[in-house]
Image (cartoon, rainbow, N blue to C red; front, side):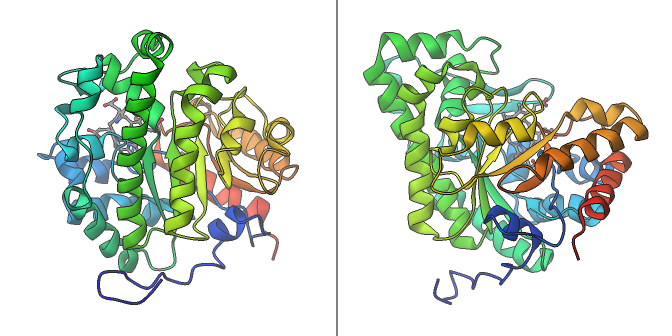
Amino acid sequence: MTNTPSVPARRDLDETPLLVAARGGVPEHTPVWFMRQAGRSLPEYRKAREGTSMLQACLTPELVCEITAQPVRRHGVDAAILFSDIVLPLYAAGVGLDIVPGTGPVVAEPVREPADVAALPRLTPEQVEPVGRAVTMLLSELGRTPLIGFAGAPFTLASYLIEGGPSRNHERTKALMHSDPDTWHALLEKLAETTLTFLRAQLAAGVDAVQLFDSWAGALSLRDYREFVLPHSRRIFEGVAASAEGVPRIHFGVGTGELLGAMTSAEADVVGVDWRVPLDAAAHRVRGSGTREPVLQGNLDPAVLFAGNDAVEREVRRILDEGRQTGGHIFNLGHGVLPETDPDVLTRVVELVHTASRRR
Ligand SMILES: Cc1c2[nH]c(c1CCC(=O)O)Cc1[nH]c(c(CCC(=O)O)c1C)Cc1[nH]c(c(CCC(=O)O)c1C)Cc1[nH]c(c(C)c1CCC(=O)O)C2
């Protein structure tokens, strides 16, 4: 990457545990970060967010910078994850939606007909310019802690758009997929383009890795995933590699035990695993699906953080042991931090992962 004013020189963080592990190397200790580490489990987050709506906060660079840095300062995690939301690019592109506390994203006019798909706006880079500014600020704020950028995958975004909000069964989404495949693929193509525009804005500003959240992909059969979703997610990973060679790409979903091989074949370097599949078993499932042995990320059950020190320590050690039997391990939860989690428990998990895995 050239060193022009609009494109900052990428900090040389190649030796940091997160980037070493993500590239399949042997880090000085197993890196650890937590999905949803920036958020409601932290009192300093609740204070910073007072009086600002979630989506407005995501477009306020100073606030994004502060909230992203909070868990790094408090827990000493090995990576920051950009404070944003998977629906932000849709909102920035002009889709009528809000994030309702306690519910999640709610869409004013769900997308259900071919005409709705045709009318769906595409994101332009200018519309997420505040996110790029936040990333630029973060690079100096974070020093030698890598910054993970992210976006929602087309299937999970499509589910919110079609259902109009969070859904247990994704029935309207699956109905469109099976009854009108042309409209389905047109929608996913458009969403893939928006996702790629959002990720490219973060990459151009200097994020060190990216994670694609296909949180609800586990609702699909392997057959449907391969036919209706995988080509679109693969296009995103290919697009990321073309824009930012060597930037590690992480692919994550919940309940994806049956899909791990397919999700690896989307050209992910790292695959997130939830708590349902032990990491050593997951390693067997992904073997041979990628160009090299995939690195796994996970997979402490976020509910175990409520079970007391002894149980937490036992589970962390078990996961580190299972992680040694994989192509590489980045410690994380199996899904996001729950809002009621005691932040001190998270800090202890970071300390334990570091001391129990230190190699030099
Ligand atoms: C499905 C999904 C969403 N958003 C996201 C996903 C994928 C991850 C996952 O599977 O959980 C991704 C996300 N959302 C948020 C982050 C920030 C970075 C981090 O991980 O710390 C990330 C990575 C902040 C947020 N995103 C949201 C909050 C809470 C809003 C608030 O604090 O007012 C935060 C901190 C809101 C949100 N946004 C979404 C939901 C379901 C909710 C929760 C709604 C609620 O229960 O109030 C959609």
